[in-house]
Length: 337
Image (tube, rainbow, N blue to C red; front, side, top):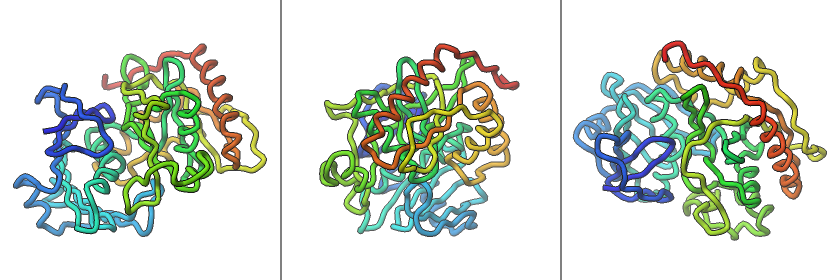
């Protein structure tokens, strides 16, 4: 069996997971998720044979850049089933601690892994009562900054520019948050960035400068394990959150404060998991993000349309993050802690 650390959870898999680094350090009792590739234990096999109720169905590509998926409840809601438009299928048990994945001949284990580390892990984390943001995160000093924004605003692109400037990247696309010791902690993801081909061409001179994520995707992969880059493998306290507006040709590298009430609405809009997995999910998410909005500095920035000017934006964020650390105040613990 292979073991991995991802988003603060210890994973155990029956075969290697492309894009992750094996870490045989977790004890069996510490394993948070067991994953079965191309095969399933009997309980998951039985759930896969049932039809269930469709509870969400997307068309085309969603806001996270993934193909459409159909979601079903299985076996009296003891399992969730997610089937992507390319035929990759996941069965997840209700507590988010075991899942199986299969795929058709035209897909591959790389396709399955691509979904696993993104939307599937977001569901797993939500089932384990961990709130996730649709964001990228970069390590600056002794803390992390999160980059949020609508699809196309340049979250991964900005993280890639930070990486080229020598800053360690913490996570791409998915940032789980935990509160501990009066601070909010951003969890580390996988050691890579996913970039559209036109972005790679703008940053590196040619789309072919980076390999395709998988042969069936147009996105390309920047490996943070390469000598020129850094990946931060541990969680970090959240220093500040930066909301990226739509790109603007005339934008300057200005960082503007965002009031907590408006920031809370923006945080809720950038929550990763849009499905209601249990009745307490939304209240739990609202409670956590309310505390984040009132106790983590929130900023709004407008990225330039020309990637050549992104280093200026990164420099402005670095300066602002330094000021945020200097004036940090502890956040109250939730009432149930």
